[in-house]
Length: 252
Image (cartoon, rainbow, N blue to C red; front, side):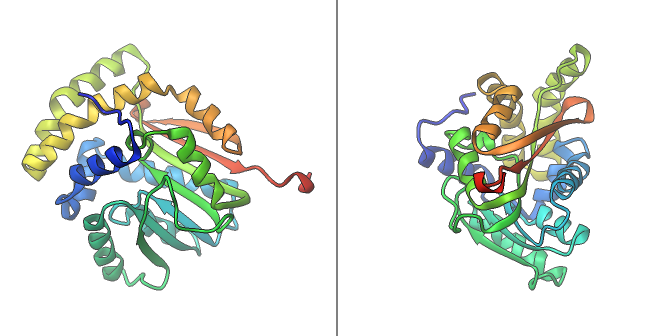
């Protein structure tokens, strides 16, 4: 399955088409498709950001989907969160969930593209993003754009699916993504989520063939994010990454 695009417009159109119509079951299905680990991975990402910047007050969550990460942020820290997503259907469900939690005063959701964020430079103390880099044409340029809106010294943290390196877990992962994901998607979400299940495994494999984790770490550093750390999650099925935006030269 071809999962690389020549233009940002192609990537954005594909992503919108893949996830339109799925929002009401998105978080449940994300748990199923991650073998029940998605929530734990999210918390590990937020914890990593808070270790870098424990005093964060203004947070941007990119690819926020139905606001699951945004809601987790406000449970963990006294922050205000702006969530950005490409898909209006996701944002609509996210606003409904934010309202159910009475969190409208602390979470604001807006439509936008990670490749061109609608915010001034250095607007946020911390930024998180989840399952994003496989859906953009130029990961390095996107990382530079993400770093642009974080203040010097602020935190950046991410969560992505990954491919286990150990031969045993790699074989199990291939079997699960090849057969288990489409079946689980169909049983819990119907034909649309079966499509997502069929897409996910090849998409992850191709992304890491094109952009190995070491290359992504280098791209973070080139974007001005230093002290980059990584943590493999769940035998290598997930990857949390974090770092601190480099301070101004005058700051030493």
